[in-house]
Image 1: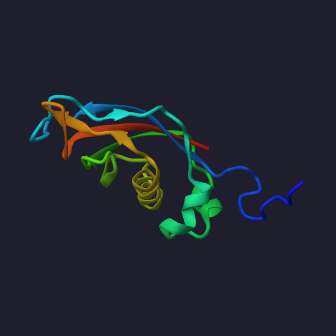
Image 2 (image 1 turned 45 degrees about the horizontal axis):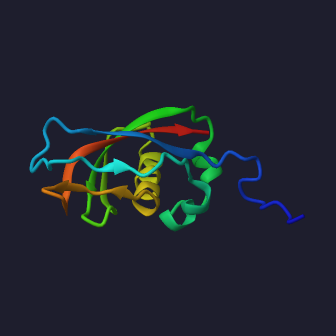
Length: 132
């Protein structure tokens, strides 16, 4: 059996669980069809933390409880998320930065489209649950 990783061995790595996407009432350039989640698999924060600039995830997550976040997202025609801005965060700015980074790196969407053509949009809000 492989040896357990020393960092995060307690299993408190945290997950971002996409819940849904809704229209931002202040959005501009609203497409005919909204971007869609491609499945709602949880995204593990642990393997991405150091690449997002967070070496000590354990310390960052200490004392945190599950939370819901709302993130303004910019979705490219490829389905990639190129910008994330927390509208309602966890109350911990560093953790919100990590969540934004993890979402940008890992979450891919079915892009928004107008007349069947994929298009860029920033008129949507991603709702997600943060679990520890």
